[in-house]
Structures are given as C-alpha cells and as structure tokens.
Image (cartoon, rainbow, N blue to C red):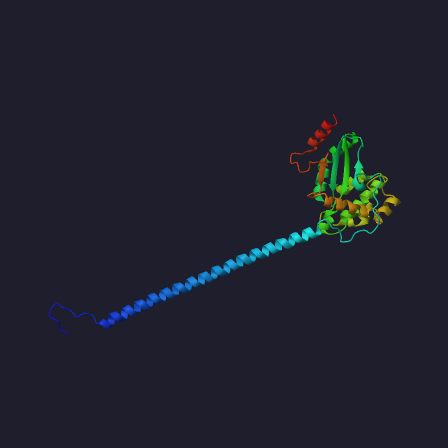
Length: 275
C-alpha cells in the first residue's frame, strides 16, 4: 500500500507472530531442558547418597565382623582343652596355685606379672626390666609372682603359648624356672610364627640351661603335664579384667600403665618400701 512520501508500511503481522512463536518455543525448550538437567542432578545426588549410605553400612558391618572374630577368638588356643587333671608345678602359690614365685617369701614388695611367651610386648618388658628384677630378687627385696597366659594362641592361632608355658612349668618342677624363662624370651619367635608349638624347639632351648635337659623334663614337656594348669591360669587372666599382656602390678598397683615408669623408678620404689 502506498502511504505517501516518507512513510513505510508496517511489517506484515504474520512475521511478528512467527518470531514470537519461535521465542516461546525456544524458552519452553530451555525450561524443559533445565528441568531435565535438574531431574538428572537429583537422580545423581540420590544415587550418590545411596552409595555413601551403602558403603557406610558395609564398613560398619565389616568392622563388626572383625570385632566379632577377635572377640570370639580372644583367649582361645587351638580350640581344644586338655582333658587331664590340673597339675600345678612344684611350689606354685597364690589363689588356686596359679602363681610361680621367684624371690624371697619375706620380701616386702611383690611384683605380679601376667605374661605370654609369644607376646612381643612381654619380651620388651623383660629385656628392659630383667636386670633390675633379678637384682632386687637376689637382694631379697622383691618377690615376683609369674602368671602364664595364652592369649596369642587365641588371637593368632596355634599352641605355642600353651606349650611354652607348660615347658616353663616343667622347668619350675626342676627348680630352673628363672633361667629357662629368660631363655624363652631371648629366643622368642615372631608373633605370627608358632615355633614354640614344636616341642623339640622347647627341648633344644632347655639345653641352654645347665641341668635342665633331663629325661624327667623331656617327659613333662612331651606329655603336656601342666597343660590343664596353664589353661586354668589363662581363664583366671580372662576373668581378671586385664587389658592385655604383660600386666605388671607392684603391690597391687598397675605400673605397666604408668608412662613415667622406668627400671630405675621401679628399683627406687622397691627400695623405699624396704626401708
């Protein structure tokens, strides 16, 4: 249509409608795409939460299983107990005759030691305190009561703790407990190595103690004469509420848990008690 000079015709309306419709479709498509992305993100978040919760449950169940196995095995040996009578070693004292005494009965201080011959921490204690303990017992100032346990047999498997303890009790029968006790720790195998389950190993070590490797000692070791006594001692340890081996008590006070304890401090405490 001719509108005269200087005037232009308006664009056809159908063009505007077309552009408007295209914009609306574009916006609707963008909204739908955004909604779809949000839904995908929600789905991913949901799966992630499910995986985290699932993993946490697995970890808790796994930890519970481990704790259950450790608790079930704690304090056991090879799963069987000796059926023989409880035969205490010569000179055993204390409740139920479960303590092997070393030192003068008249000593004013008593050191109670719960130990396992397969226990690395027990060896560490022995090597650190042995000379001081020997000095004090030889001087008549300290009496030591040794109690034998078999917790490593239960935790690691095997029978080495029990057989070594039986052999030590056999050495007590022969009046050779202190030196054989020290030989066992000096030759302690790695914790995972049940070498003490081999009776020949225990007999070979007896050769390091003058006068111990006798026929009587060999029969005592091979026959497991004191096995039931060892098992009874281990049960007393379990029922005692102790946290582990070694447990070391000086006149009833747990000194092994005292981080400031040293051989020199132990010696001073015993000497003060004897003044």
